Length: 77
Image (cartoon, rainbow, N blue to C red; front, side, top):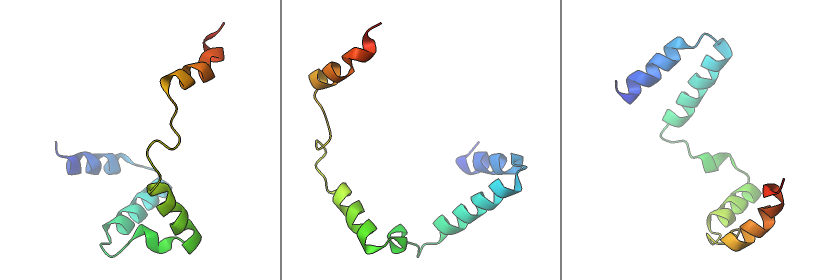
């Protein structure tokens, strides 16, 4: 069964009208080729998003030793 068929089967099984409305709205939104999710963000939110995307991968990471030390109390009975 293809992915499209699987999705169609899932949608056909939905009885909840509100859920169907949400699914329909999502499909309409994401199927619109002219839609850019950034268009709906204000300038401050766009700047925050771009800053987060450009953060170094290691910014909020901890070494294994730091992790073990921070979680040691969780492993004690």
